[in-house]
Image (tube, rainbow, N blue to C red; front, side, top):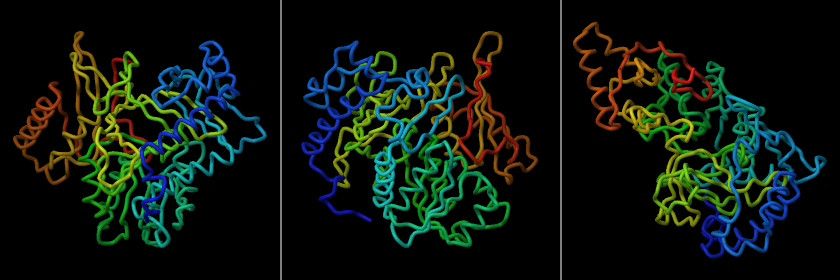
Length: 433
């Protein structure tokens, strides 16, 4: 449900940039109350009056995940603890977690951004929203929950997993919208198929919000076809309030980043130098409307580019491309940079391929090998060895043509690979084990 062409979403660029500069100055003043930034600003001689335009943000140093972990838990808070109402943590594979603190205003602002995103896709009173993301310390559950309430929809706080219950809830309450990871959407489709339930005919789903994992356009198309829905890409990260940092408008050609709350940059992942619009690199975000824990020039590790052109929907907030992968997800095979999403795109474009796959990187006699383990639809396991070999060669040839790397392909029956109800782990790099 549009809020009208006079809303913040359609503000003239010059007005939006004025808001950004004013909020950035206040953010620097506020950040100076945190132990981490106070030390950095003193060392670098940084003052709010140094900021005259958004490009001046480049005078400020980057903040990294390591900074957040090394200053765990309270090194980044800019308010006294009695003004902080919530903490979320984001755990990594190693070391300490990252603690993200919210004031009451921060909670309201984060919910407001989700409500903005949902209304942009047409959601509002009368819709039934089933949140299939984890609640608790993960931001994807609670932040989206409060935002959905603010958007005026009926909220089912289902949480992650418990697939039988998810299906029961969707049928009982005639769910129209779900928030779900792409891998769980495909897993859920498998279970529905096993039960003989046609999601397009027997469920009331109209819209799916996909988040928390990089995925390919082919995966989105597959989900839309299975469920008969409109699927929207949702971008966020715990360090920036969680979901709702960016979202697709109805044109679904890139994700609008809400620039009244964030300043976005794309930089070279190796040098940190800013890249022009249209050039792919690492996304860097700065919070400019957060009280408890401002974060400046945060290196997200997400690979994307900024669209150089204005969106046809009329919204003036700039767009980024769907996340291609993470700087730490990328693996190198024989000198070629490969992202899991690129492999997924090829697989999902192959009709015989089912919904689950795994990439295994290993080393044989000092050479790196990429093995793709992929489940094939049951009807193609017809006992014909010749047909399976043809399919194996077809996938191998397509991957080589697209990525310039020749994989080994292992065809599996449906249900062979482990299924997950949360974020999926698609890559196993045995070189690191």
